[in-house]
Length: 416
Image (cartoon, rainbow, N blue to C red):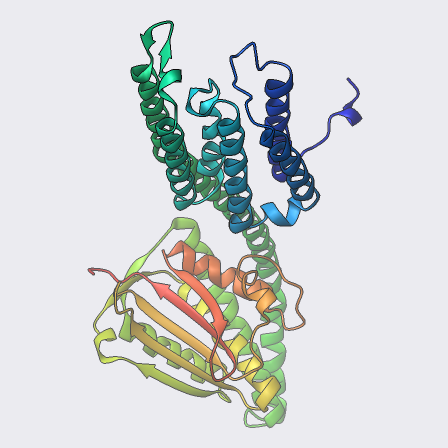
């Protein structure tokens, strides 16, 4: 068979064709196999019900994409399908119809696709309709060649109840478990791709750091010579000394972090020491920063598991926040809060800026993907997120109610 004749059906298309096949089955049983299977076609209203169902299927097939995209739309469609199945069964023999088990079809679909309440609702409606049809069976139909068939019909009803309960419990549980596993696999694939990108970035960074060592050593010698000629207190010399010192310090930290990550070295650090080091680094590297630092008293004595990548990751968040604040208010202003989560007692570090905030479309992508940005926030946040994740923490981005963006870091506390 040519490949072009095999369509790549979506889930909504497959479901629509399944419902159409059910309708075709009704037509075949009604007009061609009623006598074969002993169906009692005793009402002309069945024809009108089939015409109405044909119109309904035509409309729902035309709008199948938006209809099936929401749980509410799919549930309404399955609810109407159940109503049409009940109508067909009622007009073709009721509880004595051999195909009464077809009422389980909408229940099965709901159990696989929809939340738990949907199959339970359809089970209740179908069981109630089956019970009413069984109650309405005339006594004359309960006798067949002198045999009492009431026990047989009651057994069919009980079998239907058991089957519907199995669908609403076991099948729904299995479907939920499979969806959870699919979500976990998708997350693992995304994490693996992110780690591969970070590995490539790390390899490139290590190569560039190695290449920068020699030029920085040459620059140090040149700056020392210029300082001897112009004097160490010359403004230009001081600015060059500060910039060169920052480059050398960053290169040293990069080497230490690379070695620590490669050897998986982690230590227990007191939060108060982390706060002190963060304050010291910000004072040294960002002297123009207006820092608002709030540390709750109960945080001071707690300990966390850390390595050499934690402090640079926090500094990166603060640097991004100060840049965002400066772009809007012309001053580098950042607020940092250290606190404990009220329920989990994990350490919460909130870094807030006073800028324009993060667009809603980028909040879910920053920290997970490389985003093209003039300020370079995409890569910095991605690296910071990887550092926090390696320490068992998370990075949550959001907007502050008074304006600006908030980067919230959650780290597990040792001994809680």
